[in-house]
Image 1 (cartoon, rainbow, N blue to C red):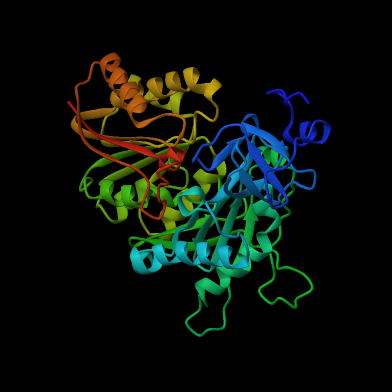
Image 2: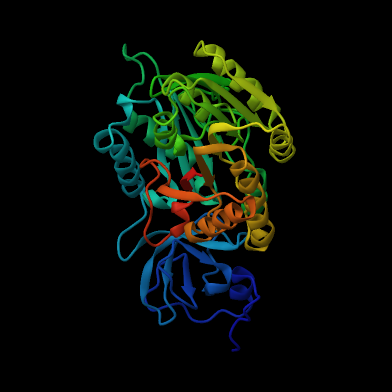
Amino acid sequence: MPPKRAGDSPSRSAAAARRDPPAEAESPWVRLRSVSYHPFLYARMIADVSPDARPGDVVAVYDRRGAFFGRGLYNPRSQIAVRMLRHGPGPVDGAFWRQRISEAVALRRRTLHLDLCTDAYRLVHAEGDGLSGLTAERYADHVVLEVFALGVFQRADMLSRLLREELGSPGSDGGADWTVQVRADERVQQIEGFRVTEVDVAPADAGSARPRRVGGRLVVREHGVRYRVDVHRGQKTGFFCDQRDNRRALAALCRDADVLDVCCYTGGFGLCARVVGGAASVTGVDLDEQAVALARENANLNQVRAQFVHADAFPYLRQALANNRQYDAVVVDPPKIVATRAELPDGRQRYLDLNKLALGLVRPGGVLLTCSCSGLVSRDDFLDVVRHAARVAGRRIVLFNQTGAAPDHPVAPDCPETAYLKALWLRVL
């Protein structure tokens, strides 16, 4: 019987031209052409699939010789055909999910003690916590699940329950409960084959007939600053917890400074610089009109003055240069510019152009904090782009720090994409 061609779908090929299953195989199973300890096993890496494997199933994974390799979530619709959950022996059962959730929450609460400084942080960081396809954010008494895999979506009720149990009551009187919402990017839903509705994942009371509908906004605290978060319509899950430590670090450099926050979203960096750092002035710019409106509300919430402008960053920065504007500190934190490898060349050029413009607006001796959240752009590549931007702008730069996401976004050593955020701290001369 001929082997499956590289372009064949795993499930269709297996159905049309199945080999014998691995010795003593557990069903459903997948056999690999090639082994990788990266948690993503792509469709091209799969040789055979058992006929009973269904989208979203936990499958036993075997190497090409038939040796047991581990277990993961299977979806033949996705290019990531298997998301590995564990390597080596052991089940993926209720106890497995409970243990992984418990370990993730313990890192944030018992190791990092995040409740002391904020009520907005990442509870689960996908592959970084051994739960590929799932992120979870805590916002006050809300938990927002962002789903990237069909198998995770199918288990959303269970994961919601486990998180509620692990977190305990958010209310001091014990009377409140966590509202849990599930979100997913539209493109992810199309690829993975599921549909999110705008309701609570599961009712707090298991006997309730209908889940509670999630409200739009709530207020969170971070380092003494308060922010309104739109968990329903905001970007990603509504806020960017990964920049928490970078916001505070920037604020420490901004006493009496004029600050420009480019791609400011709801005002995180600028307001922290103003409230915590004592900045003299803050200007924020963003193309998302709803985010800018929320940033203005956040300034009022903290009883500080700040200017927030609804504008595209590129023409705004060009106009500021033409007007000879300069700032003591400039932050550039754009949304993901590079989503696929095909976008890398154009993405590098956009990063170069954006940083060239930003560098021209920094007063001599001032600070530029420039960030990239594109996982496909490595730290070295990003530094190379910024170095090139400085040469084009005619500015000398001194790199005095390099940081990433806050520690509630742990990095999986076998999955470099979990170290997606790069933040370069530059003195501009």
